[in-house]
Amino acid sequence: MSRSRSVAPFMPVAFVAAVVLAAVPQPADAQSDDDFVPVTDAMLQDPDPGDWPMWRRTLDGWGYSPLDQVTRENVGEIRLAWSRALMAGTQEVTPLAYDGVLYMPNGSDVIQAIDAATGDLVWEYRRDLPEDVYEYVGGNARSMRNIAIYDRFIINVSDDDYAYALDATTGEIAWETRIFDYREIPAGHSSGPIIADGRVISGRSCRPRGGPESCVVVAHDALTGEELWRRRTVPA
Image (cartoon, rainbow, N blue to C red):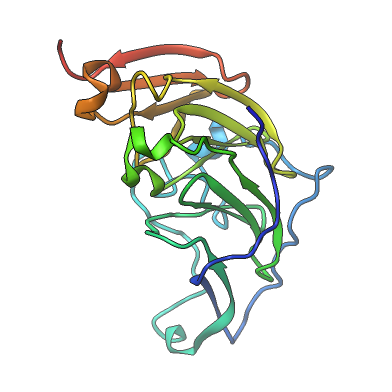
């Protein structure tokens, strides 16, 4: 099955960035392949103040940023810096922020890397999904809340029931591993993976059409995509 990466027209849903007009530090440039620093477990456990490397930023789910640029005194001075249209449909996403780049998941397995300072598109990945996939996994699968970053990879789980990784600097596929045959065991999801100790942890939903086998939590090796274990969440 082919996978594609392309720049294409966007539908009218916008992602907006704002800045404080006073005392704004010079933003970092989006990283190139040569200067990209691989993300480690230690970096995920104690992120740089300017990074947001996972959903809710840290594994404890605190959702707190230590940055102090925006204060009670200057919050009224925030103004629009740039905006960019996203894909049409429901948006429940939290982008990742790492070293000057936003990694933005969209519905229907589209991921965009965006220069955080300018809003310019760095790369875009559009997964080549089978035409019948939503007949099996349901339309709610189009919505995605988060993706993950580890080493040099942006990691996600797909609507056609794969775990996969993209090169963080190019958007090219690095590995992909099938979790289910979606036609035999249709299992949707709305939450993306998290990383723990070099493992990609993801879950699939318990859809009646999929039976109890679809209710699983799965771990993959973040570097290779090898499945390490899976656990069913309901008895049968």
